[in-house]
Amino acid sequence: MFSGDFLPFPGLPVSGAGLRFWGLAKGLEARGHTVTLLMPRESLASFDSHFKDLQEHTFTPETVGSKIEEASPDVIVLQHWSLAKTLPATEIPLVIDLHGPLLLETFFQGRQDLAALEREKVEALSRADFLTCAGEVQRKYFYSWMLLSGFNLREERVATIPVSLSPDLPEHKAQGEITFVFGGMFLPWQDPTFALDVVVRRLERRGEGMLKFFAGAHPFVNLPPGEFPALARRLARSERVIMPGLIPHSQLIDEYRSAHVAVDVMAQNPERELAFSTRTVEYLWCGLPVIHHNYSELSPYIKEYQAGWVVDPTDEAMIRDAIDEIFNDTDLVQRFSRNAQRLVRERLTWDKTIDPLDRFCRNPVKRAERKSAGAPSSLLIEIQRETRRIGFENSVLRERVHRQDRTLQTIMQETARRRRRAMYRLLARLRNLAKAMLGTDKPILLDAGEAKVLPELLGTRRYGQSFVASRDNLCRIDVLFATYPRVNTQDIHFHLEEQPSQQDDIVTLKVNAAEIQDWHFHPFRFAPLADSAGKRYLFSLDSPLSVEGDAVTVWSYVERTTADTVRYENGKPVDGQLVFEVRYSPEGC
Image (cartoon, rainbow, N blue to C red; front, side):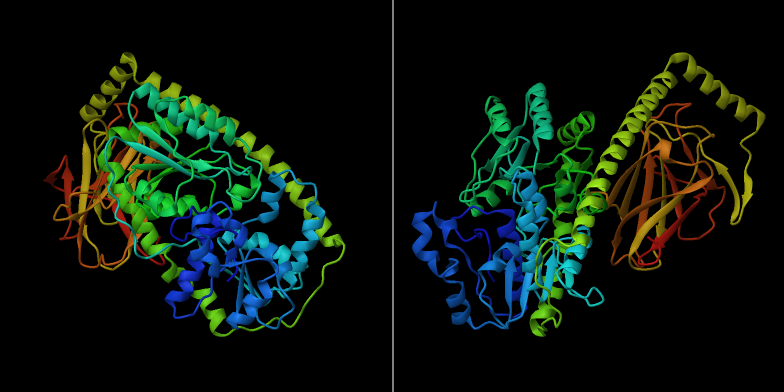
């Protein structure tokens, strides 16, 4: 296995590409393969004290052939296509791992040789027999390149292996005052400046908390630093920022383990949209919940597992709110920390994700069809033209959606303010009294019996319902709501716990009342609970900021429809049963 970057051997820092490739190697070793793992000798130029011990793990372009001859491998695995030009002609099956869109990274470096690199990429991929990449979004991006490189797309020659780390997760022990971390190389296709500036301003305004900035220029690859130098100068002026720079990987992990939250919000661009970020997975692996942008392939993972805060990278208020919630609700941060490691343990460890590469290495089959690269084909030119057109249209569309979101947000804020005025609240209270006096809230007949709407869900009021799960993999609870009917503005909180009562919620979800439809079941989805069969659960709903006239409610049967359910109001058992449905994976989520 030939890496194009330095690897996380003891005493060395690590790049995302190196950590990704390390995960592939360790995954194969875990399946019983013997792996020879090599990195560029120049990567050790800045670490002379380690050179002697690690020399056997290095190669130069001149020694690639001898390293292959010495190892006599069944399969060769390359980290990215740019290394293919160093390989001698060989009949050994070749795998290329495409960790990310390398040409897009090159574009952001401002290089002028993209046309030559396109030909080099097609030539390199034409030599491969099997490809791996880090995400499903990336896999679709690489289809066109595979077609240009002579692949038969009717065959399965590309597989997704997410960025994965060791199944032996470190123990997370946050210490001292709330500490945020950011780590990584200075790379021109990454821009975390907006979010980090917001974080520092918020810490300074609150007069509490610290940001640790573990970042610096790449040790041996000369890359434009992008926005990072100016950012670093600003951060250095704040008393709320510590800047250790790049440190050995083992030391970095210790720092992550003792921090509270990672700031992981990047400005949106085509490269970041395709990236399956290594740094993000490592944060989660260390038990760090992340403040993460809302457009990556990892965003749904984080949202589903409640492993952090998924935010619009351009929305300062949204980032500020996440920071304030971190300071105001330490129990939530601890729960998100546990969820972060649960996400990695269930979905992103190398023993679980390595299957596609393991299968190929056990039965390596060379491709019959080959194609040499020449001048860019008309298809490639058309793909480039279409990519630029789509990129422009997407940028225009995103701007329109952003303006509409801002307009809607303004309307909702004004609506919420208006409904909190004394006169509006008095009228709402009088309307509710009139309904009670006139008897307009009489029960109606539903399928399972008579049902009625409960009083508005507001303030300290909480409605709950217990039930016994009939199957494993409970994954969704649908609740019948009423909106009166009007657009309401405040958040509804959904809690799920196992009975007898546990210390923490198993699930905590939030939905804005504006998304609730009148006389509709609203679904609350969560990661399947594998061993739910026969267990008793309690879900509850509250909306602390809602007021009369700006609140939703739920429907309840007058009498229980099943014997093993109990309805609760403010934690006390009462008659009746909420109108709800439960669903189970895989068909119901």
